[in-house]
Amino acid sequence: MNQKRRTLDIKEAEMCMSCGDTPFKDIDLYIIEISQGIINQRTLREFGGMTMLVGGHPALADMFVARRNIANLMPAVRVTLCHKCFLMEDHSLAALWEKGIAKQKEESEKA
Image (tube, rainbow, N blue to C red; front, side, top):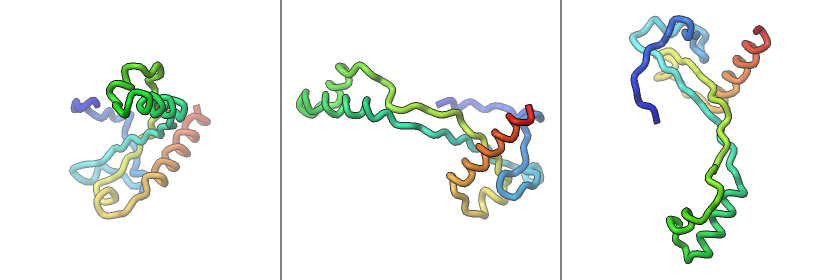
């Protein structure tokens, strides 16, 4: 994971996804990136079968499995929350993800 600190450009600034207000009234804001991973069932079955074949040793089975992709990651959805909404409200990640998808679709239709 990339743990480097980076800056937020003014062009990247967005309103709070929860309340719709500006997130710049407080000292901090929260930007969450949510990615959906679609699990590759075939790879899991192959790995599980190979693990059983080599006597239950996953490290040994890992050397013999041809496929490496355990999941296909969809493009990340970026959600901005203000300080108040992040700390004071309960949020469903699925609901925030859906709002982010709808916003991305709306922006792509405008372009």
